[in-house]
Length: 176
Image (cartoon, rainbow, N blue to C red; front, side, top):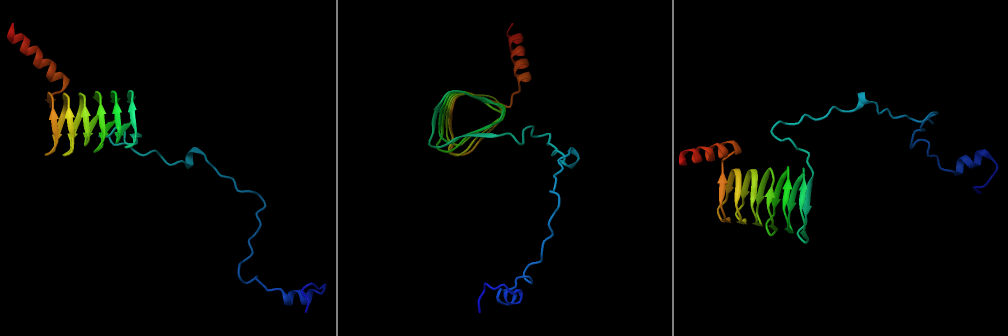
């Protein structure tokens, strides 16, 4: 029997029927329209008062990089390679194990697992992990020093600017 016949009866008999496999889908006359009105947008997430920058971006200096310059900004910085220069960020700084930073640091929180040769100024919290090596002065609100870490320098811990200034004023008054 030939597949190519003009008779409708034989064509239906020879061709397999797929009508039972999938239901016919209706053809849509008009295209769908997306509505992006402000009423459909989800409300913003509430921000916790204890962390003013929960979504702050983190910049990374990878382990195989050596960079010289200055880092300044509002986000977080993680150094896994080598950096020579000052770091001044409003976020946090982390120096990974095996990394080295030669320069001054101003950051909200500083975690050192590698090497830092430079001063840490006005950080609210500094943590030296067991593999940390710090050569420089530290001025911080809270200092955490893990066993095994090494530090060489002058440390001012737990003093805020007001008590430091008033303490110096009272010392100079007593000397007069």
